[in-house]
Image 1 (cartoon, rainbow, N blue to C red):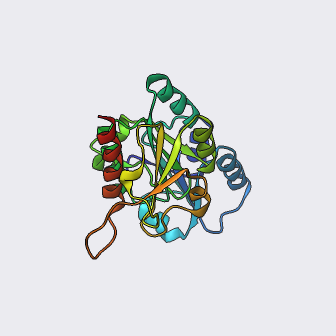
Image 2 (tube, rainbow, N blue to C red; image 1 turned 90 degrees about the horizontal axis):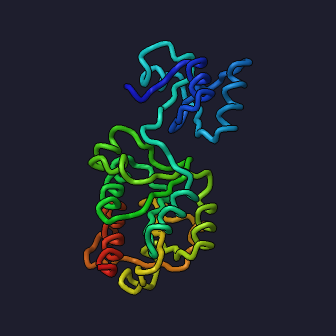
Length: 242
């Protein structure tokens, strides 16, 4: 796979050279001076990492990986402050999407495709627990992930506070709300927050939202795929702004 870099020394060199990584997989039980150097670099640069069995690394990388396999980022992430400020300089009411725990790359790609079509100013997602921008995500997005600004943050609370200070409303899409999507005024500067299908939006982020809304459901299932739900919410904003 052309988005992989493996081997202790190559990954260390890549980080020191400023290459961007989605995440790094480490073999359980690694130790030594070089390993400690790598761990320090991962923590200092905020690169997500995970310890996994050696068999998993053998399956992923068909070579001498030395217990280290890194996924190279396919796009350049932008500082969320820069993206927000740029959006405000171009529009009185920018629209952002924030993804809390959406980890499936195809759902992420589909959301990005809808977001680009809806004129969304940017997508904000967490460094840990969020979907990776890989070849599958880019393909599903029809290339939208190469066009729309993407920001990754260590904690979603940070952009929430920044957006609130900048005059945005934070709208949580949740079936637990008593309000319908159509009760929200989307003509204001808005960040739409979508949670994972399993857990929804985390309580910590939900507590910061200025509004909550649900999509009306008439069938027996009672829930939509998160990418479909995101598209419905975004296009209600588009409808109101026409």
